[in-house]
Image 1 (cartoon, rainbow, N blue to C red):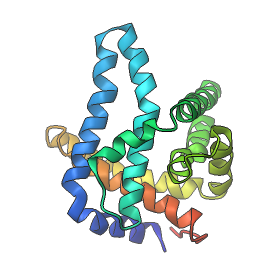
Image 2 (tube, rainbow, N blue to C red):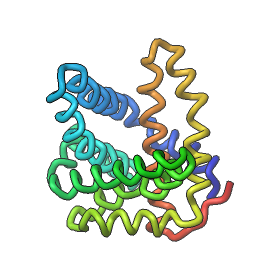
Image 3 (cartoon, rainbow, N blue to C red):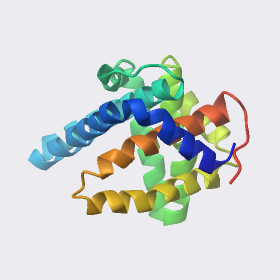
Length: 196
């Protein structure tokens, strides 16, 4: 399978769940952004909510990826392994910040290498955060450039979404997220190599 097929298949797979997924992405964006605008405590609340809600998004899109019917309550399932996901979120962001501090490129490489952590925890909630981080780094070995290209593909779509009064961004977000879930599924479960 190549990236173009994966992205095209993700769009087709999303058709019957696009509205629900867009609503969930809007909810995610609002919950993450509004508290940080209130005060210092709001910023702390945003940080505490970001990891579990990111995991909830991964759970939602993995369900669609595997052919299950998604539900709005999947977004809240990320709070179940709460301490684990908070430690994963803080560890990942700390590692990426260190990479960005030295130069932007190491930060990007670290971000790509650790990007599958939430999907790994979504599939195996019992896994420890450090094992999930290690596994993400391992399965992304030799695949970071492919994931980078996948992200690049969506930039023009996000720009177009912004031109449509920002609303279009929440049409693109589900497609992008499902493509990431399918990317994870391909490299993890099937052990296939993605081609460009």
